[in-house]
Length: 154
Image (spheres, rainbow, N blue to C red):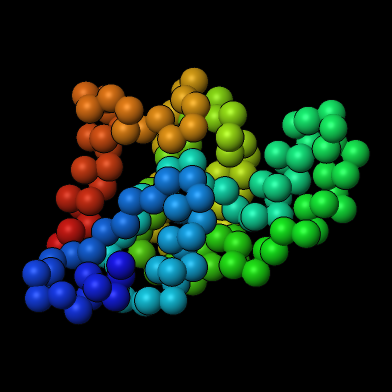
């Protein structure tokens, strides 16, 4: 998608922004890092820092898999984990995360934010579950994203 946006005549002269949620954010981070200069800014919502860490946390939630959470989590590759690529991004980043997210624990989103070295902002969504920022067209989070893109579109 980034290659298409960079090459397409339809987009010449326009800034490319990325909005990615959850696993999409985890996939987008190494993709953006592999395409320096193609993305102007990115919004990452409910994204985690490590595939292995999220696997371990999910395995720990069930009494059936709790005893094997550590050994089983090593079956999950961490080869392209977001935390390994986030430091390569030299673009503005906006992180959004619900503090009551049942899918991606809040601290894993905070861990990813802490690893980022570029210009960054973190927006807490009080009481927010998993990827809540765009649920309501009138809420403040959509406005915050649009303001973020407007600031970085020049």
